[in-house]
Amino acid sequence: MSNKGLFPTSLSKKYAMAATGLFLCLFLVGHLLGNLQLFIPGAEGKEAFNAYALFMTTFPLVKVLSYLTYFGILLHAVDGILLARANRAARPVRYAKENGAANAGWSSRNMALLGTIVLAFIAVHMQNFWYVMHFGEPGMYSLASGEEVKDLHQVVMDFFGPANSMAIAAVAFYLLAQAAIGFHLWHGFASAFQSFGLRSAKYTPWIERVGQAFSVLVPLAFAVIPVYLYISQH
Ligand code: HEM
Image 1: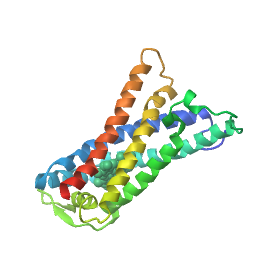
Image 2: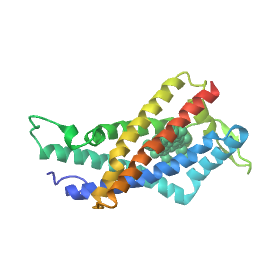
Image 3: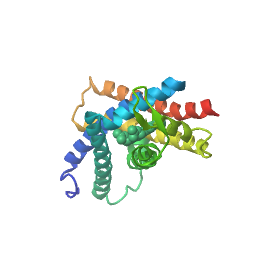
Image 4: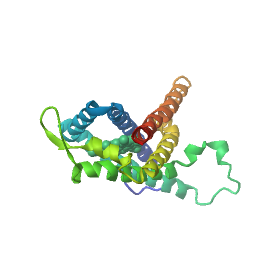
């Protein structure tokens, strides 16, 4: 097993993977709750979402959480690559007769591929919204407090609306990405607890059930957002 890299042992790589993975799950819940405001119709929704975006980009504690999230994504990705390489190096000769399905589920055997798709999604997604919010020049919006802010609500609406001639492709891409996130979490959620050594006849079935519910419900709720924004504007 490889002793090089970010973490010296396979065990420390697994701990880091599990810790960053669970932290990113918390991020997903927070991000989803914030994005649910996109369902609020009319002027009220615009005000709520833009006030929320201002809070997310200026409140000091949230800024710290944002930096932890970027760091968490990078660490999780790099550590994942190192783990995948270490696992491959530990088994240089492929089994003559591979019967992966008998030992592990599809998600478990494809974590590196799924993780790569999720990482590609995050890169494109941050370019779509985060980059525009931080470095772009979208239209401005006056909050009820009188403060002038970038109109992130309009940026998101336009991205999935008639203003974007590729909106249907954007929706399809977001849906595909949510499927990849769901499959990645299907194995990853319970696996994180196992990496921390939390395995028992009593708790493991519950952890697995919670993980499965999480990996279906969270990506599904995210997936409804672009579909709703597309349909409600076309
Ligand atoms: C599908 C519905 C989604 C919508 C409408 C959405 C919307 C947004 C918006 C508007 C921003 C910019 C916020 C800002 O810079 O203040 C953002 C940032 C971000 N999104 Fe999403 N998002 C979605 C799903 C996701 C998913 C599934 C992930 C992760 C897998 C994700 C990861 C991120 C990250 C990492 C940021 C940067 C956060 C930060 O700066 O703190 N998003 N998203």
